[in-house]
Image 1 (cartoon, rainbow, N blue to C red):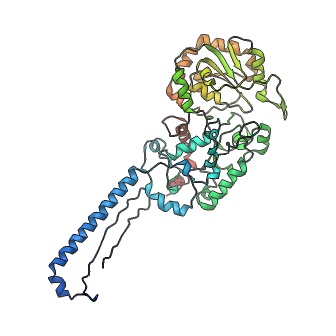
Image 2: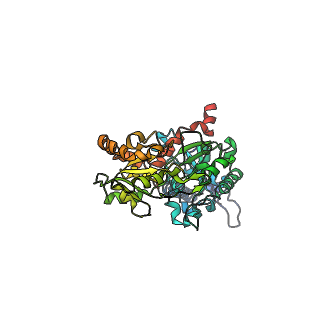
Image 3: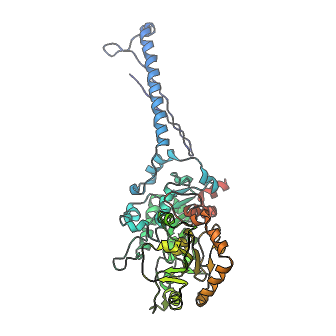
Length: 467
């Protein structure tokens, strides 16, 4: 009879080492199943020889198998895929995933060892929306890009007990209207509330801090207020279930506003890095810029009064009326798929507010080396601790739009060359772009850097410091 005993060493914290040993005993028997007498065992040299050969062979076999399987698991483990995202209970996940936690790496070292756990939610909260290709490419797609990048980031942990922050991947900006094609976000509050209910039911981590170490993305007009019209957004405010969490949002102003009454990080809108690279291949950053001032977008000649508000506070209307006939300004109201080529040919790119103060033109201008002319009073710009906005842009007050030509002529005659030189720095141009995988200094990198300044909200850090 062969008896095999396996023992698995368990280590309380990751990374965990796994091992086993084999112990066996062969009991000689008679034909009838009875045990041989001890004297016969001792005299049976051939039996003892075979026993040790068999023991040695089996031991080498199991030990080699263990080494090979462990090596393959570590070297060939595929990255987590969004397309296979599914939800499972914490108990099952912990048993499987805790053995595959990575050691501290470069990103972790730079961000004070920051670790992020990404919840594995059912597809209805995220990947189901990717059936529409626009979901991962439109200006609100940072919610998708951040999710993807975190799943392959060195800051990712598969052990939730090791995490400083918990990322909740809910895509709320991909419900495109069948009427005008714009994202409709009326479902956003209910979808996020449902995700939180699920997290609270299946995991213990929300309740520990009431969501203070949980991170969400709100990449649309008025961020965590989840409405496209400011008056309604202000009236509704930030939903109660989010007020204790961290929100990564494109909306930000320097004055008090109900839609930033939550711990928040201002992030850039999404612009495809692949499209930017393709444009720069045809129009190099140091190429000829034959357009003095450029803007393509919505400019209403007769703006409509919507709930007592006018689109762009009439700034874009004033631009059209004042400069449409000015040969220094290239203003276009129609859509054009290749408009990035126009940005790459321009010296100044106008970035006026729309319904909200931010615009994807900010990112496109910087990435393509055109000086952004920001016309949005009180705007908070993304990653202002990394991007030297004051040195690479021109700020014009909304009330001074009528003086815009003179302001830009003055800049062109004085320090335009200096601004353009700073814009050519690839670190500046790359800081606002989201890549599928985290690149040093890119937008997701800067998100992680911002989260590292909020480690006081980490339950794990608080627990360790109290010990």
